[in-house]
Structures are given as C-alpha cells and as structure tokens.
Amino acid sequence: MAHEAYVQLVCPECQKQWESTPSELPSHAENFSCPNCHATRRMAEFMRTDRDLENLKRLQ
Ligand SMILES: [Zn+2]
Image (cartoon, rainbow, N blue to C red; front, side, top):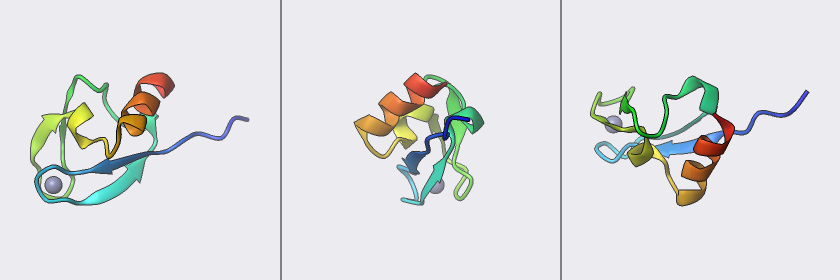
C-alpha cells in the first residue's frame, strides 16, 4: 500500500497552519472554507508552498 502524502495548508486570513491528505480536499480551483475562521478562498490559496500545490494537483 502506498503511503499517502500530506499537503501543508495555511489560511491567508487567520494564518492557521495544518495539514491534510489531498483526497480530503477539493480541487485547487474550487472554493474552500477555512475550518478556523471560515474565510472562503480558492483551494490553491491555502497551499503553503508551490510544492504543496503541485502535490495537491498530482495526488488528486
Ligand atoms: Zn482562517
């Protein structure tokens, strides 16, 4: 069984940092709401680094 990678997220509004598996997240172009402050942005804006964004796209 393959180890599922995690992507690191950070909220652009409240700066909350957390990680999640790509299968639990919407596509990078879809809206996502911060679980802490409920700010709604595109999923791509919550990715902590470009590498996290690449992993999200690759693993979904
Ligand atoms: Zn937030």
